[in-house]
Length: 141
Image (cartoon, rainbow, N blue to C red):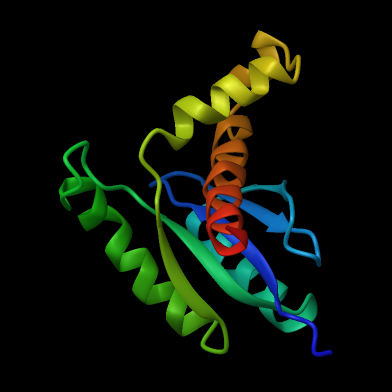
């Protein structure tokens, strides 16, 4: 049996990029951290090279009606840089509507303090988990 490549989730933001990593069985997403965009590209390239990540699931910020708007236009250039930084990985897009709100709900349910939720990056990493977990669930279902 050939093992499947590892999977990472990405929540792009102009200032911070949240990254999550799936377990080897592709059942659960866990937060890896948040990084400035340039550093995130280096970290994702490292994950592909050193950790066996072969799929990068990038949050695609569709509008409420499902169309592409200004938010997609902000992510598109990062997507191009990501494909150059990690050319051996498959890059897939995942609808990320409501991921930040769901991430906050998950943090509250997990008992994360309000102070910790307000720390820069906590919600970004949690949103990357939501994006990745949605993709993992779709692949399993």
